[in-house]
Image (cartoon, rainbow, N blue to C red; front, top):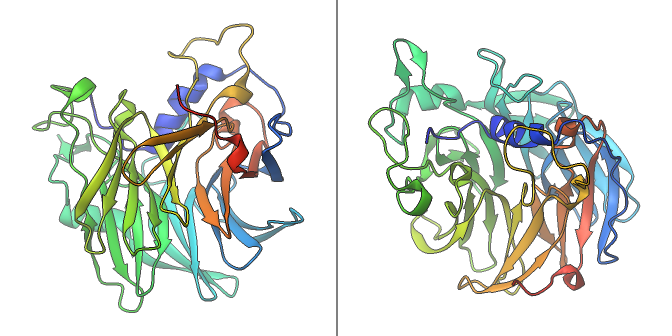
Length: 361
């Protein structure tokens, strides 16, 4: 299995199987899932910047939008970005991960821009780090990057940002690493390098020349109250290859939740429970048209685990991507890949109450 490093390509290929299914997203039937804001375009990461204000990376229209978590009122904070997938704040600055530029079907666009970390402040943005350049110069996962002068796969696709105290952590789904960037100096180093998955469906799987197994593909980072972190990895979308790694402040693994398929976001509540977004759960397999009675609103779910990995519940949320726990509540970006269904402005921010979680079967 070749490594699945362009997350937009992964999502696009899977969601294209739903093309032709056009159904406007509506208020969730579950009264414990409340739509806070709608009309977004490809919402990925979301983070709170104050008591009731959150910011959302709208990947499909190149902007960062602020949302009032009570009224749902929206305000555009930055435009003209290339595939913004991750966003977080520190003080008055926004840190944005620009992903790999992609075409209408989610395919990578060589030289299309993106693949960097930018800071937006006072309405102006500047590059903090060229992450593609870092990957080319350092290649932390050690995999073959080029054959006959051509890239064997996407090399950098920054997907998630966590603006920590003195550093910014960036999950690069293309490079298969989580980088640490000093906020003051810009000095960059590898903070966490999740391993290639070589068990289960990934045993003996084809990858880049010289590598066997499924690439981890990191997609999310959450900091727990005890100062440890949780990192979600897509696992090249192979069944059971998804992982949620529990790591210490130095980026060393201290625990893991495994057996997942394509997790794309992670959050931790005040009690240490871990929430994981399962973006494409229930999507039809293959590239053909879906069944006539297929309901796209049923694609996706959020899983809840105890810190030791014990399953605690599952909530149906449509195509969730980013997750954040704030002030005693869980929020998610929903309908995150609506563009691939031919539904413009389908994205939502939803609040997920604990009553939405049912026991896993």
